Each structure stands twice: as C-alpha cells, then as structure tokens.
Image (cartoon, rainbow, N blue to C red; front, side, top):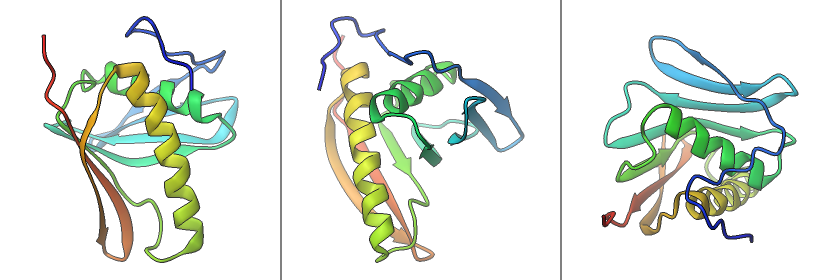
Length: 140
C-alpha cells in the first residue's frame, strides 16, 4: 500500500463527495455511485460513530480517503475512538467479507491520517456486528 508523504494527502481520484446533514447524522455520498454511502452520527463526541461505510464500486483507497475527508469536514479526524456499527448480521459469511473490506478501507484511512490502532474489538449488538477502535494518543 502506498504511504503518503503529506498528512493532508487523500486521493479521491476524481470522486466528488457531497454532504447532507439531518438532525442525527452527516451523510456523504457521490453522484457517480448511488451505492457509495458514509453516515456519521451527530453530534460527534470523543468516539466517532460511523453507522454506514458502504464503498459501492469505489476502491478501498478511495473509500479510505473519503472517510478521511468526511471526518475532517466534521472536525473529527483526531478523536480517540471510532465505532463502525451495523456491519451486518453476526455470523453471516457476507458480514465477514464486508468486515474484511472495511478493514482494508481502514488501512488506507490510517495511513492517510497517520494514526495507529491501540485496540480493536468486535462487538455484537442486536445481532449486528460492530468494530470498535481505540487509537494511540497523538503526540505534538
């Protein structure tokens, strides 16, 4: 995987993101792919709640860059924890495939933002799988 030299590096590779907010969340999408969707709960606290990370036909690199852009747009790029919720039904083989893709997307996100994961935990809530991340503390 390519390592960015500049922490602001986030190659959307021509993907135009649009943002729409409602009273509960910020949603990021692209007109080029109706299956691409990122939803982040509002207000953003110390733990960012990503309730949808659906890359559609975007590459993992594009989706990681889009996640970085979305979190920056919300001023949430340096929070200490992130929860990726509702990845799919627990125990479903399709959920395992989705989780593997989300983890590859996160690898790009982490490289772009130069973040490191201190702990990673899978959790099941209401029979849906969630991925909980705690990041290493940032140093100035």
